[in-house]
Image (tube, rainbow, N blue to C red):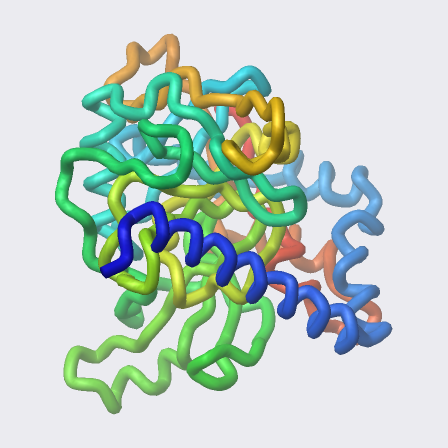
Length: 317
């Protein structure tokens, strides 16, 4: 029987090997159009995007729910994470419970891989630990009702075939066509979050998909091979620039490695109002978001890949 240490090390090796294979495949298959798409956001004049936001109706900006917002303080600033119980209610509840217990305070980023992710949440600091709470059942996908509007920007191939991609709130998602809902018993279709830069997702021990507990990771870059394999429960909506500043290394593998840590982790609703970071997100079902997307369009009339588009955020005026 595999010990947690063995399972963790095996999973680390397997996940890293899979990721490398995905990188090679992606690079060899890249077309000129894809390269253009990847650079599209950076190529849009800042003044064009600024004019869209300046003209945005105040009603097009939404406050994020403090009960489903996490503030993670680090030496590189505070990461504000919008949590999404619509995707992963069990995981969001576990994260909030642990944050309220102050479980995550001073826990290190014990495994950080450049171009991949920052992993944390282990009280032992070596990848083998967890909390005293029960493990959580996997929530890799969710059932999307027609009223759960998605701002579609493209299509891509997935394990489930060709799916639409777009945004729900601040979250990049993939979804089967809403038209298929009439063929299902519950009137809903399968959808799932995407592992783009800023996504927060749950780690697990070994091959048991229902073994997530306290460890999670914040994505530094897009990593599609993780989609539908790990549970996404949040998106970093503020402080993204700090994600790639977390010190790269793995505890126990790199001699002399002193990992960075999360100083405090709090549910925003539990903080005094003066200590909450008042982040607002542009509504993805608004005309202002449509105008923003139009500034990103390529010459052929399509949009960049969904992971190359960031939903605009701001501090509430």
